[in-house]
Length: 278
Image 1 (cartoon, helix red, strand yellow):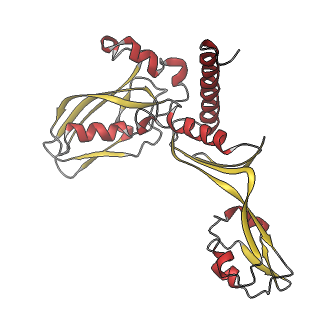
Image 2 (cartoon, rainbow, N blue to C red; image 1 turned 90 degrees about the horizontal axis):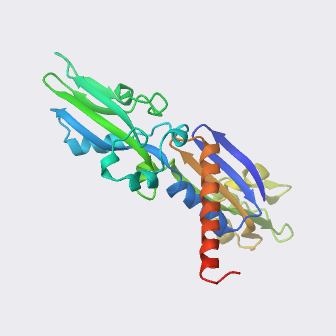
Image 3 (cartoon, helix red, strand yellow; image 1 turned 135 degrees about the horizontal axis):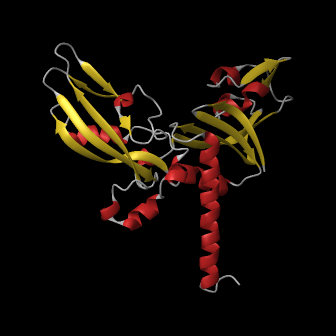
């Protein structure tokens, strides 16, 4: 397998992966989406809430705040371990990180409450972004609550997924018959991604734009000479991930791979137990 980094930012990653089957790549993509645990608010205790938001609405907004979770694996129990502990340990320190929020509207004007106003009980578990607006308060309005975040997985709720976008696409192959090409330029005008150009009176695929091709085949349709053929490269894909910031791209992919390997090992053991494998 060969992996090439096409684009990397703190919150996104685009990889060119060669020598991998589609089902294996999709398994990794799905593991990233639904299996890698992160911290998110799961319980909220409202002591006072006279804002315009219902308790449920505000709790939902708190639940969608992404929290930095890189250090959470070493400090908090897994979702399965906490579930086994039962309701008696629902707010135990080894399962939950606590946040306090207390605010009151000013005598004049409007007070905007942001994610940075949450007071963390654990300095390692803090919002990824401190400027997420939660609610507004005016004179006479007050909110006081306790929020509890725990590790969870995206398959339970999307708020625990470490990524917001996970897609893969085929690597395009553009074959141009230069003998048949008339250089009319219709294919160039039809291409929505600007992948094609002219050189010496013949259509060519621009190397720097080749991966932008989305295999729409519009160029094939408008080419009267049938000089262009669009296909895909076998076992080569482009994987694009957009992260919430809860986990670093490296930790997210490593954790997803480890989870997938563990599941495959468990599946193998189950098959051996029922006699399918020797």
